Length: 246
Image (tube, rainbow, N blue to C red; front, top):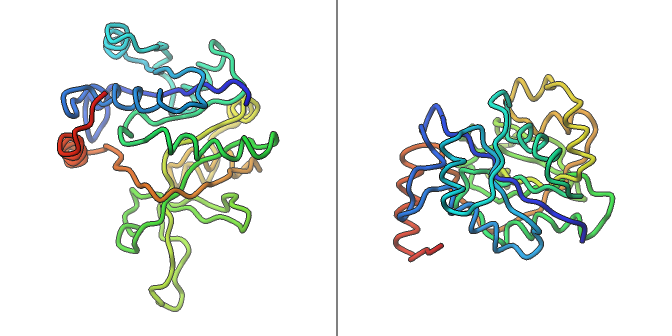
């Protein structure tokens, strides 16, 4: 396999959950859980945090976690990774969200599968089956794919539409992990935010709308992304109950 670097974008200020990356889960900052879980993925050559916060930089240095200070002007985690790409060379970059402490090495290895299967792979990500009730939540981004597993569309709306009200539609939630070839990231840097991206507030649509194929691999292991105090409490209780340790 070519050199693979995992970047964990982390922004200190969040509208719904201030100071999110440094909030404690089972005795450790959330960002520490994301980093240490990612480090267990055998295919990754290097894992680092990318942030615009000097406070997060200070924590990472104290905890001996590799970190890169990036611009505060970035609109998305992918933009932050593009900046890191100029300093940390690799052929493939994994984007592991800083608010996904439940992501495991198995998730990461599964996501990298399309790159093992074909040198032409540009982008890969994950999906997981969810109930109709869960699919109605616009915070759960849905994805539909073609028969070869390439994304046709991502949406906050309910897709596909159950025209016959059969109740038999299997919905899939997009999990916010990505792997990019260096070439795909370089192309992302040249693209302006697309129309669909602006409507849905989903950055992956920028690539899809510009003809970059995104391979979507199914996992059976869902995660809880931490966006609210309620999410934080759920994950904290789960980690304590199951005895998670760094």
